Amino acid sequence: MNSLLELKTLGQRIWLDNLSRTLLGEGALKRLIDEDGLAGVTSNPTIFYKAISESPYYRDDLVRVLNDGGLTPEQRYEALAIPDIQAACDLLRPVFEASRGEDGYVSLEVSPALAHDAPGTVAAARRLRAAVKRDNLLIKVPATPAGVTAIAGLIAEGCSVNVTLMFSLEHVASVADAYIRGLSGLAASGGDVGRVKSVASIFLSRVDTLVDRKLEAAGGEALARRGRSGVALAKLAYQDYRRIFTGARFTELRARGARPQYLLWASTGAKNPAYSDVLYVEPLIGPETINTLPDATLAAFRDHGRAAATLEHGIDEARGQFEFLRGTGIDMRQVGEELQAEGVRLFAQSFDQLLALMAAARKQTA
Image (cartoon, rainbow, N blue to C red):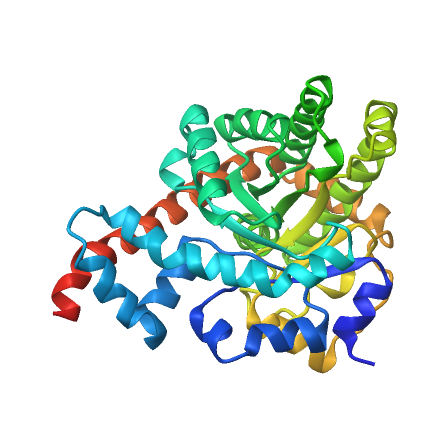
């Protein structure tokens, strides 16, 4: 049996961490849905920069939007990206309907420039949601303090959200709290909490990249602890997820039809070539979770990945890893804050590159 399809029987869904008109126009995305059970798609400025700058399928539309002198670079980008998001939503619509809204989502990110602007994030999310006009759209919002405020407000309005840039157990707790507060507000206003979907994305390989550097600086026994922190974080986060969403605070909302906020494993391509190419897949398989995979990792798991219920194995070892890090002077909360700040910067840089492409493309297509 296809290893990717086996994951579905274990309660985990696979999303693709990529989107382009090449995938859409040449049928690759549809094949992934039909043959591999793909249940969702994520996008971000980096993905769209690569797609728009490399795929030939954007050329005609680039000329069209550039000839409209009234558009800003950001509006040009959205004029290209939104049709891709709509097309992916439409491809996944049968999955969305068959699962009664559990699966079949596509994520579109608000501008990274709004990472510290809660009102601006809410306004942008409303605008993008209205522009895409698809029930299976998730608006992507970072787990910064301002983002968390925006998330609670958007959920209270009935907007489905993919929370991004989470790197610590503290991020998991604050985001889950915002989700539950938002659902409570929606319920209080008479809204249908069962129509809201949210996922909380924890970035894994980036955690190992930073923590490994700190372990290498410590030397000695610490060297044997490299490559374990991302998986440990995910395993401990899942324990927190189970406690939060089976707890009393969520009980009434669940009775009203509310869905738990599934954890989503992100940044799952191993950045260290010495590590297994399925390091962030095989140990993290369990129910009510999502793993969003880049193309190479998806292909690697299909080829040689082993599907088994592993997520709740090795919890003591995960706790031991965190205790060792603490004893070595590595503060995982501080690691999370450093990585989130870096993530905001990197996405902002990608977005700036994307807007520069939109501003300069007139010369390139003249």
